[in-house]
Length: 364
Image (cartoon, rainbow, N blue to C red; front, side, top):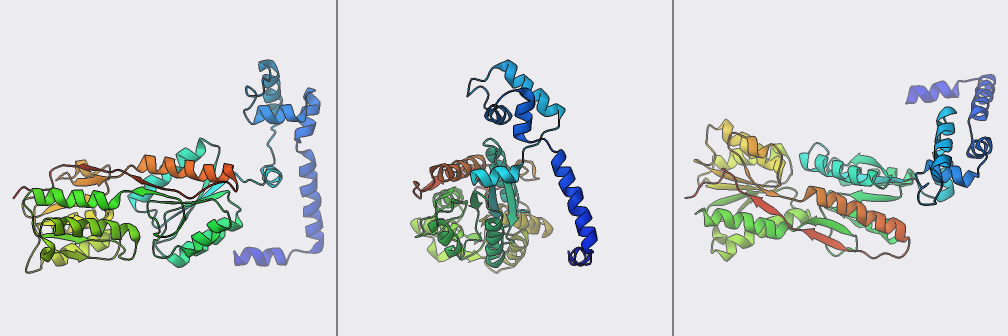
C-alpha cells in the first residue's frame, strides 16, 4: 500500500494529464441508459425497468423486453452502480460482523445470511472482529464508511454502546446470536437458558451428579444464559454443591486445556457440558488423547450442533440451534428497518432449540 502511494505521488503532471484523457475517452465510449433507450426507440424508464427485472410488474410486452435485453447484451451495457447508489441513496449492501469466522457456527450463519440477502438483491460485506471489541468498533467504522444500508452483527458481547449509539441515529442494525440486556437493539437468538437447562437435566436424568461446565466468554450475556441454565438445573435437583464452571473462551484450545485439567482433578467429573461446539471438540480431543472413552469413562454434551458430530467415533449429543432460521430472520428484520425508514421499533426474537441425543452420554 505504501509503495503504491509513493508511485502515485511521483507521477508527473504530464502523466496525470495523459491518464485523465485516456479515462475520459474510455468513459465516452460507454453506453448510457439514455443512449441505449434512444437506439431502441423506447423510454429510459422502460429500459431501466426491463434491466431491473420489473418488465412483468409494469406490463412491458415480451417483445419489448427481448429487444431491450438483446441490445443491452450487444453493446455490453453495464449500469453505473455508483451513480445509482447516489441517486437512490442506497448501496444494496449489508455489513456483517462476526467474532470468529473460523468457528463453524459463524461460518454457517454467515452463509445463511448471505443466501437470504441475495434473495433481495443485497450483497454482504463480511468483517471478522477476532473476538475483540476494539476490532469490532473498527469494523463498524469501516462499514459506515462504505455506506452500507444496514448492519447485522454477532457481537463480541461485552460492550454494546457503539451499536446502540448508531441505532439511535436510525441506522438499521440487527444483533444475531448474541444480544445486550437493557438495550433497544433488535436481536434474534436462541433460547440459551432453556436449552442449557434441558441439556443438564438430561445428564441428571441419566444418573450424573458430578457435571462440569466449560464456558466461553464469561461476561457475554449469551454465555451467562447458558451457564445460568446449567446452575439452575443443578440447583433444582439439589446438586448446587457440585457446581464447576471453568474456561473463558469459545475456542477449541479452551475446551482442550480445561478438559485436561478436569481429567487430572481429584474429583474428576462423570460428565462435561461444553457451552460451544469448538469447546466441545477441544474437550473431545483431550479425552481421546488421555486414552479415555466417551461415554464409558466420561460423558460429553455440546451446546451447538455441527454436521460432523454424528460421524465421530462416538457420535456427540448436542443442542441444535436453528441456524438457517436465525439467518433468515436477521435479514428480514434488517430489511424491515431499511424499508420502513424512520417507522420501525426494536424487537427481540428467541428461537427454540432441540437436543439431539446420540451416544456420548452414559446412563449411570
